[in-house]
Length: 242
Image 1: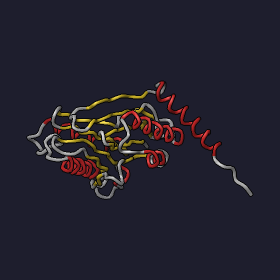
Image 2: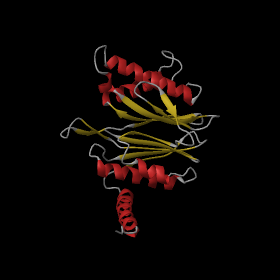
Image 3: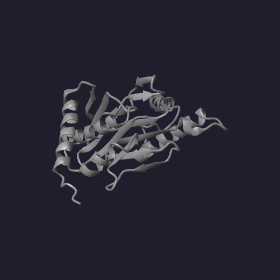
């Protein structure tokens, strides 16, 4: 399992993903689940992945390979005219990989993978999509400003309660770290380090990319501070009366 979040704020897009993958308690590894493509001044694309590791790696490798050889398959994600067209290309690639991995008669669910795609192409608005294993997708809007994939349930409540489109990048990172801390404490299949990427709207370049390791001082401060704040808030609630 994994946990990835893509979130929209007025200032741009913020992405975070864990790096744990496991095939049982005795086979745990670290793999990057965040990938990006940049044409400075023209477009930035970010892709987060969850699901079957072979499927996600094959999808990313095909997108990368075809972006370097556009004559073989046009348009590529670096030539597509809009983020919607990029989402379609990613979705088609997901279907292609899963169909090749699961021939007729095999259970395609075992090869399933889902993706969060976000970015901006020059002259258009930043956009965020959730792409399903079937290759279809949905786009975020005012009522759905973020997408999660993987182990979503533990980290969702704080996102729903605290997200504000006007919040700063710094506040957004704090929010995402609380969401990931809740998930890390609840599910052993999600693990450090955590990857962070911030895209500032209309910049057409990555503003910040960072990895939070297990011993990161800021993450520890957020984790301990959130635990203390929860205990304080719980203690301040009125007691039940019979």
